[in-house]
Amino acid sequence: MSGRDPPLRVAVLTGAAMVPEPGLEDLLAGLLDFAYRREAGRPASLDLLLAGDSEMAGLNRRHLGVDSPTDVIAFEDGEEDGEGRLRLGDIAVGLETARRTAAQRGGDPGLEAAFYALHGLLHLLGRRDGGAAERAAMLGEQARLMREYGIEAAAELL
Image 1: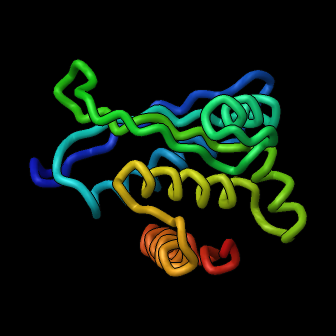
Image 2: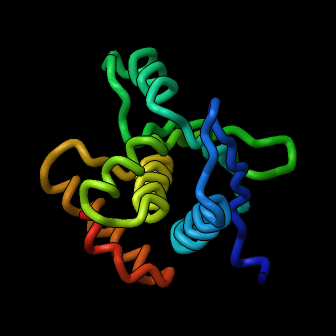
Image 3: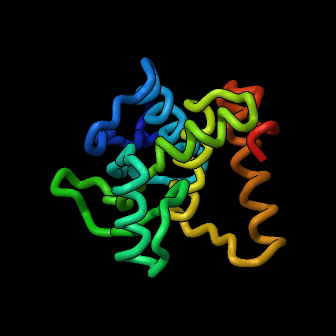
């Protein structure tokens, strides 16, 4: 890794009673680091929580006023993390939501969770998806980044 190619340090945390699929934590950390390298210029860190429905509903209620679980929530930080890295913030991924959605689509829950985590990272990097055009652009960017990372099923997640 060169000095111009800063890494993203991702701390993956699991919520109460959440057991991630084998290899999921490495997939998520690798994808987020890959996407970050394409976007930013300094070493950074973030925490990624893999949460169940009750935790996601609590976060959604407390921070967004919506009393139901959701797929992903991102919390921006922007301070230094004590090691000279930019602390991007926190991303909470609804692992149970990812599993349900993947089952409905006949897809892979790990890839669904990766799509959510990448969405959260893009929010931390300043992307917005408030209107239809912004949302379409952001979803397209997620699919493109996943394909570039080597995940060919990215289009199925849209």
